[in-house]
Each structure stands twice: as structure tokens, then as C-alpha cells.
Length: 262
Image (cartoon, rainbow, N blue to C red):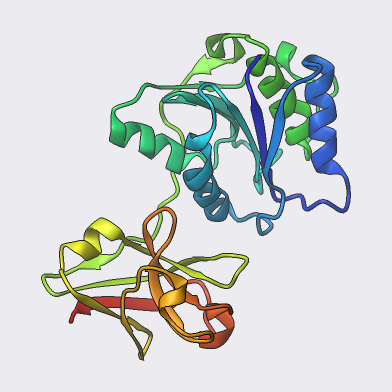
């Protein structure tokens, strides 16, 4: 029996996230199910992909990650399942799996993807607006129960990928932007540690505000001060010690950030 995780933008007030578990348990009683998050911003495919990037590969081998962030539900977008390295993915073909796919490719790990086109592994009555319940949860349950990935659908290679904003790199500076704001108000930027380290000693600028040098931990700055730091996934992160950088800097996604030689 494989472990299962759930990642959705459902919230927790209406009960849809629990229905997914009910469907899975009818197929696989006693399945181990972990909630990655049900608080993804509605329809935010990039946010979901970033959560998968920082969580999925920490789970035991062959964990099945069921993702329902699906603004295209009921359209021609395909339902898919995949193996990326030693992890499985089940969800919509809308780019939300991009970070898992690209990690596997970067590390030279096996990749196998199928179009979920075998209705015998779905619920009998499939609605046009709740594929999470009717297709993804049962398909994921069967996969966790040991049904081979290849039995669930037809092999494909042309999955949708989201394009994360790319930083612009020069000899003495890197220009990027805020790509995500977490629940603490930390600003996660599209500039990675290995890019910054090539510049040597650096300083950080947010829009026109000088933020100073990188620090190692939040406690290196006094409460209320802004600290440029690396996120757990080694992106540049702009935080406020014991506060919200988003509120402090009146920040939003897409705001410009610059790292330059000190």
C-alpha cells in the first residue's frame, strides 16, 4: 500500500477535501493520507507547483500525490497520472506538475506519464465540474493500491508546463521578481542561491528600497527589520523578523527585485 497526499485549492469549510478521502478509502480502506494543503489560492497553478516543489520529494518512495487545482475542469484539458523519479502524481494536465517533472529531468530520474482515459478506474457517474472526486481520487486510490501506472491510461509525453518567471543575469547583478508570497508574508523570489553565490558578496534591492546584505537566519536582524535570506528551497526570500515583509514593503507578486555585487 502506497502513501497518498492531497493538494487542493478547496479550502476546508465546504467538505470537498474530505470527499476525496472518502472516495479513496472506499477503494483502499486504511490508506495513509496526508494533507499537503487545501489553502492554495483559488486557481493558482503556480502556487500549487511551488508547494509540490518543496514537499513531494520528502515523502516515502512511491507516494501518490493527488492534486486538484483545476481551473480548466470539464474542458479539453487532460487528466493525467505520472511517475517522476520515485514519486507519483495524479491531477490535471495544466502545468501544476511542472516542478516535479523538471526535478526528475534535472536529476536524470525516470519519467512516465499517462493520459487517464480508462473510465473503469473512475467513479461511475462523472460530473463536468468535480474531476477531483470523480477521476483523480479514484485513479489515485487504485494507483496506491498497486494498479500499474500503465493500466490507468495511454502514454503521453506532451504535458503542459508552466513558465516560471526567469531572472535576468548579468556579470554584476541579477534582476528578478516576487513569484510567491507565503502565509507569513515572506516574499519568495525567482532568484536561486547558486545564482547569487556566483556574484560573491551581494546586497539586495526591492523596487527602490535598499535591503542590505544577505543574512543567515531571522535572528540576525532585530524585530521588525527586513532580512534577505534563503528560503528552505534556496530561493531568495525577503522576510521581516517576527513580522510580514509583504505588509512592511506593500509588496505583491511581480514586484521587481535586484541582487548586485556589494
